[in-house]
Image (cartoon, rainbow, N blue to C red; front, side):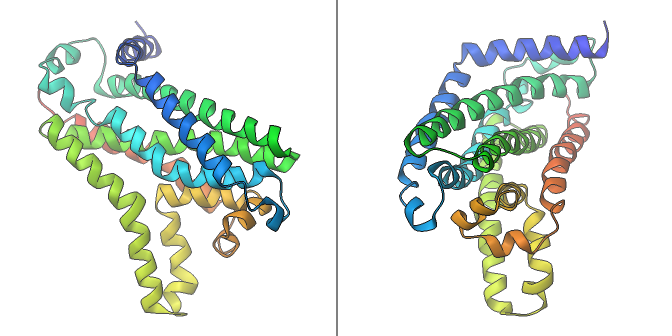
Length: 276
């Protein structure tokens, strides 16, 4: 049996678990409800800004994605290793004719695919409503497609970080607590710390030179900057033209593309040390 076949078999088994737990249905429902609500609530400034409803909706959904997608990704991945060990199934899984990297890859394929379905359906429904209510131009449609694609990348990054936590934690309860702490650091505290540093620095060297690059090092902020910098009208709607213009175009995409690779590499290294 080849490596791709083993990975597909593990992914198929993990997908069956997700279907049995109705995780895909719940995640998709959450994305649809929040995306539609935020899209409708955020479409009020269209007349003031002179942009179509879809542009403002994409800006609103980008803000939603920064908070919601990392949370969903960590919820689906935090017990990938610790949960199997708690249930006594880790020894059986490790007895399969598959390497530990292949086991993680198989789980990742199923988990990221589930997140991709939730993101595409949720943002697609909200975007479709915005188009029906206020129309859309080619630029805003491209922004919506970019939002869907980058949301999958952001989800993959936090799925990999969830595996890292799961491999390092001693139990599912510990992994859940660490996942909550990780979400809080990356999504909330990191930006608050940067804001405090900028306030203290004023117009100093950190604010002018280091701040944009430090911001891009966070996958959540890299996601936000990529979606904002990619479309001028979205940047105007989001009120972040300064941050988007202060970095080269490749900085945020490179950061967001590297995070899933780095996270998975760290997770594989930690998983190699786990004993059944």
